[in-house]
Length: 243
Ligand code: F6R
Image (cartoon, rainbow, N blue to C red; front, side):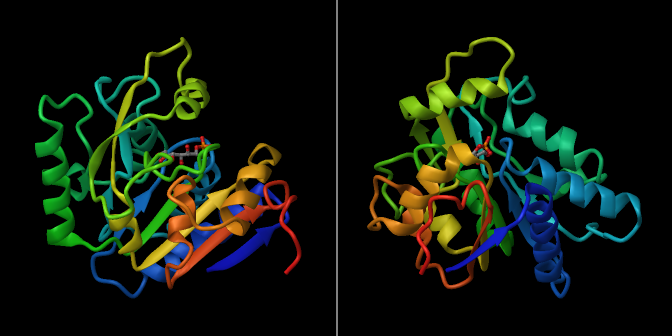
């Protein structure tokens, strides 16, 4: 695992954009997974700017969604798909056929997980996965206590996630479950990137990077991935101890 501390969120977003582009460039049909949430917004912007300046061609990329709320309309306010559509897929003219998303409204979540896993079997493993870090150490919706051998699955949202995620909705929302790629899927990604910004995350960053590997801090279970970079801005890195 490599840790890259960036002077600002803007620099972090730029470096991650360059990292993704460098890793996908030699590939014929790269499969890319980018989290939603607040943290990747700067990255989306960097990708949009490059696309608009004709310096980024993503016509050969495929995308897989990291996670989605279960039982919410797929394109409702706060849904992961809506955020990806608005920030990335529509502005970059990504063809729907190139995207595999979880249907959060499915009547049969097990079949839905199976469908996503079949997509991964056909087009995976993921070439580059960019994930964020929850205030409880979750990645995707792999909440504290998650079995690391799981692939796509339904997860019971942790109380911290339910509370923190209200920020994605204008009115208070009843959230109970998510549907998510599992740690086993993420661990198979050829390149794994974790992005974290802001002083609010400094404590969880310190725990995830310096405490014992544990199921209770799911992001620690990725630490031994062989091609893994954690990009932090200086606020998020503030409580790390010098090596
Ligand atoms: C979102 C996701 C979540 C977020 C995490 C951080 O697709 O998978 O794990 O990455 O909760 O969210 P932000 O960036 O809003 O702090």
